Image 1 (cartoon, helix red, strand yellow):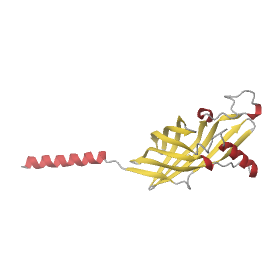
Image 2 (image 1 turned 45 degrees about the vertical axis):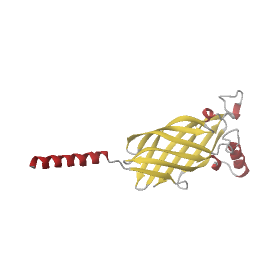
Image 3 (image 1 turned 90 degrees about the vertical axis):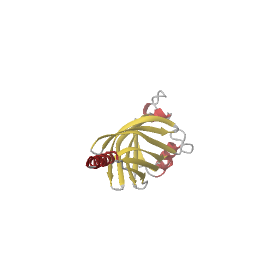
Image 4 (image 1 turned 180 degrees about the horizontal axis):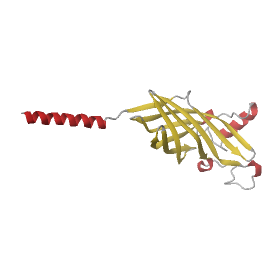
Length: 199
């Protein structure tokens, strides 16, 4: 009887330990569009243009305090220009929205889906995912700083480089057209993202 009691106690202890090691806390954080911010910058031979663009929706999954997945969509019709004013800014934004660039009437959103988030220590991650612009999807990799505090997640990405030519955006590109001279617009543009999400 005593041996049976000891055996039962050992089984109970093993079960508790197994539960402790297998216990998995999983939480979903939904993007706060108003608190989040994306800035963009595109360069050309004679200078650059810059502006902002907004998220439309998104969510991220956190397990045991670590980012494991997620996705977000960008509202392409929300694009603005911050280095020009008035009609000059309006003209540039109109051009970016038309078919020469992002064709926002047909493609109102762009999307990024996380396929892998590798924790690098601290709040640092190496993120791999699929970026979709104008229905073209390409893999993108970048470093991110992700902080989870209570019911809030904050992710920051600095100088994410996107090659527009990979998404079929050819206007003014020296990769597709010759003799553009000082009208050449470089293929790469950069994004800086601050994404806030809450439970």
